[in-house]
Length: 343
Image (cartoon, rainbow, N blue to C red; front, side):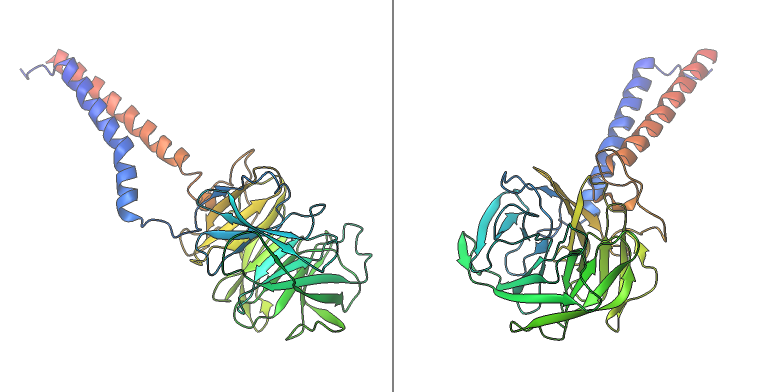
């Protein structure tokens, strides 16, 4: 006859095992994952003045700082937001540019200058020209007034509505992606922008309905996002190549912006709205695999399911593991108790 295993002992063993299931995954993750680089974690923009964040650009000289701006009806302002706190640490006033019409994008070039795209046209492409403003990224963070260089932009095939402006981090060439439900285009600017006369942008590729885009820090990839998709394309010979790779972008009600974190391994997705959330998502192949095709699977309030949750969607997986493990241990305990009583 086997000795009877006390019920209290089984209960204690099960509780200890469940506790281990809860704790150990976190310990293992902490032990195997280095601390995130500055500016590579999700954050919330808390400044009540920023209600229509329509573009993002990661600072090159201020770790963890992101530059953003409102869509319209705000004035000639650009804001520096600290991703560690979500607070604004600087506001740049652009002097001498009049009243911007529809500022939609911002990008940082290899020359250390910020490029602000006043390129939107909600009237469906009726303005015969749009503007780009350029000024050096401020060396010190604080409210400051600058006088940017203003460039006039025209498209070779006529007016376009656009929301994405990208400066290549190696060549310094400026690209604009038009926003069209039928067939958008990627437009390439001249090798060097000119402040005298107009700068003609010519179409070099077809793109889907794009609300923003960004080059990877090494210039080897271009990520484009829309309201319901995000894809990363290899960049070669001045064009995106192939069909690209799907990125598990978060579901955001007004998906307006994307940029790379300085580490090049993280994409930062932003949206319009008060207290808008900027969500960090691993770059395909850099931290988690991306699906070969399709569109993100949106949720009602959070990021899309899958590897691109950026750490914010992983709690479901851990919880499921704990639940399954706990159930198995309870069943094992009951079995041991039953065997002890039979013996």
